[in-house]
Length: 78
Image (cartoon, rainbow, N blue to C red):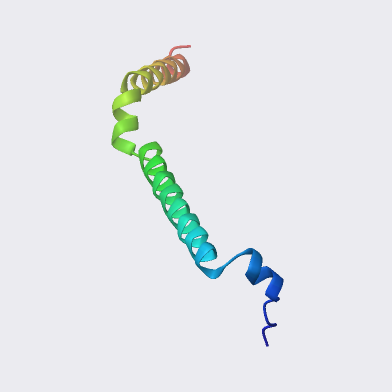
């Protein structure tokens, strides 16, 4: 069972003030979550990351293919 709220608490914090603070905190929380969602979506956007790093990825894949090609060719030409 819930305990009654002490009267001195009600005098210090009237219900309308508490309701306004709660609404303000809910709004702030909603805005923070919306900002977090948009940030996560931006960081996890695969197409954007692919466009940004396509040349680096191509260079790495090319170097790996070149190294693998020399390794395989070296196995047959001894």
